[in-house]
Amino acid sequence: MQLEQRTETLKRMLTLIEEKTSIMGETGTIEVSHYTSNERLADELNTLFLEYPVIVAHASQLAEPGSFITLNIGHIPIIVNRDRHGVLRTFLNSCRHRGAKLTDKPCGKAKAFKCPYHAWGYMDDGSLKFVPSNEAFPTLDLDQHGLKELSVTELAGFIWVVPKNKVPKNKASNNEEPENKELDIQGYLAGIDNDLEHFGLKNHVVRVSDIQRPKCNWKLVIDAFSEGYHLKSLHKDSVESFFLEHGTVFQKMGRHSRSVGARKEILKAQSLPESEWDFRGWTTPFYTLFPNTILVFHPDWVSRITVFPDGTDQCIVYHDMLVPEDADLKATYWDKTFNLINQQVFAAEDIAICESIQSAARSGADTHWVTGGLESPVLWFHQECDAALKS
Ligand code: FES
Ligand SMILES: [Fe+2]
Image 1 (cartoon, rainbow, N blue to C red):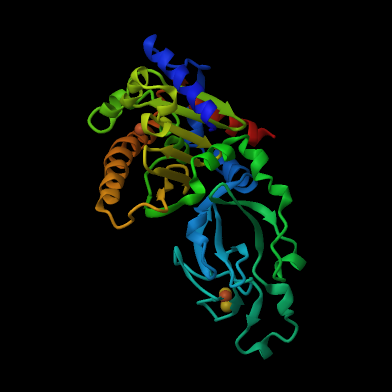
Image 2: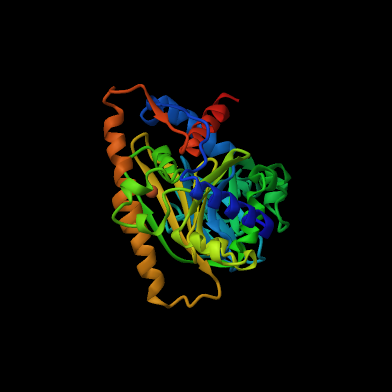
């Protein structure tokens, strides 16, 4: 968000606070079966988690040549690495011999990947270089058995992968940067990339990460982080006291949404000139990035929360704490604040309520749930899921 936009947003929020209200958006309903249905999950895995850009890491996590991370995007296991020449690459984490995962490590450094099953060896550009007892494979063409490569893009501080976009073989086997114009992450982000640039996300590093496996549908986690309506009730004993009840604004941006909540400090605006207004200190902007990421901008750090389904009733939640790269990374302050948000607020409040909803979802008590005017980003997220599955 540029300065002008930040100032306009603050003015709008102050007016709403004076009127003792927040933005009231579209209301609607959500189909309860979408949280429990196997068919729905299969559609989501084959569409949302194949055809749309998913954040797999912050760029700083793969800055060094030789570094790699692994994760599953839905049911697709991938390795994302920066090879020895500095080229960012993504491979299916599946040996071309008989399919074993090349590594189970969540992250590390490697110049080559040796399959643990029969020791086929792949270079960090994905090419197959070594087959033990190769006389047992008289017709095997090594050039045709490099790792399957997917296109990957670095933009606005994050690394994005669309699993269905394969890099053509002739590109995958040389040292050139894979071409992936078809990703057009920038167009997809509908202006949010500009916000991330202005918030300096490129100049952040990951201070600490956590992975949780709540017993709930992945969409419930996205829902919980897409609205501030529950702040006053669910978070009354943790972070509620930092925020005002009113003044929240939100808007749709492409398939995504941006919300901004008012922190109590925003009232300082009444006695300070606009040139001293502190958008980051006085508000909490948060983004629902379709399909499965939430960004929350706390005053001095950023939560990146990415959620993957693991069955209808379970999911995997990655939570990274991004701090400015020039921060004192050793300070225990960061651990304390991350623990407060990650354990007390997210795990014990947000995720606990998601699990409670999941346990009720199969009861048949309701076929639909309602979303009010303060929860439009939740509704938009579900509408976008529906639209993507139908298209
Ligand atoms: S499955 Fe990888 S070497 Fe056999
Ligand atoms: Fe919450």
